[in-house]
Image (cartoon, rainbow, N blue to C red):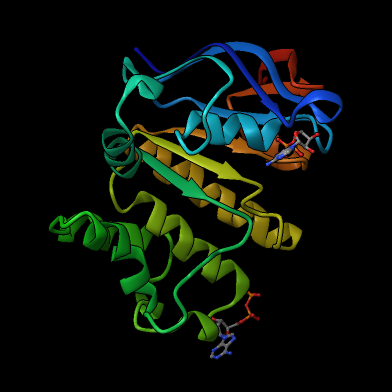
Length: 226
Ligand code: ADP
Ligand code: ADP
């Protein structure tokens, strides 16, 4: 089953002389549980593409299907529900709430969605992310790698079918980057979640099942790793 299907997707910004085509007629599909890395030069349209996939930016043309649903045909309210339930975002900036503990930050999406936590799942998540003995700590009391693991926990708390990560290791050193990515990859595989990740670091992108290269808003190659 294709969890994610993108059809002739385009996004233009600006008008007249200032018009920029950030994403230019892109189509591809991603299977359940697949780990896809998106690579390409700065300004090639990677972030725009990721935002369009996650329902946070409207395309100029084309369609995005998540679990078979044409997401931009949904009403704004339904799109926001779909985003909360099916998509988990991880960014380069951790965006943690400074006055909440690691565990409270992770539980935030469930709170916002008025949903009860699955205690066993959350505990397992804390174990996988190696945060068990840090769950009561504030973000300021955690290292960069630990803070990013909290933000991954927060993205996974809702058991999303898709995890979208934009340069999630951009602020971490090589060793921490690899560790954090291993954990993200492991948990995505464990729960059969689809992972789409942007990275300019080929060591990180090489951990994916498939690498899609974007140049000037278009796919220049799409290859299985190994
Ligand atoms: P990447 O993530 O590969 O660096 P982006 O998707 O951020 O690329 O940007 C692609 C192109 O779209 C760039 O030329 C960028 O300047 C332009 N762009 C991105 N976001 C906006 C915006 N909100 N308004 C205008 N232009 C934008
Ligand atoms: P890393 O190797 O991940 O960069 P650090 O060297 O930054 O880790 O931190 C080592 C340990 O010290 C971590 O377990 C972290 O929880 C703890 N720590 C780091 N900064 C603080 C702080 N400001 N207050 C309390 N504990 C901290």
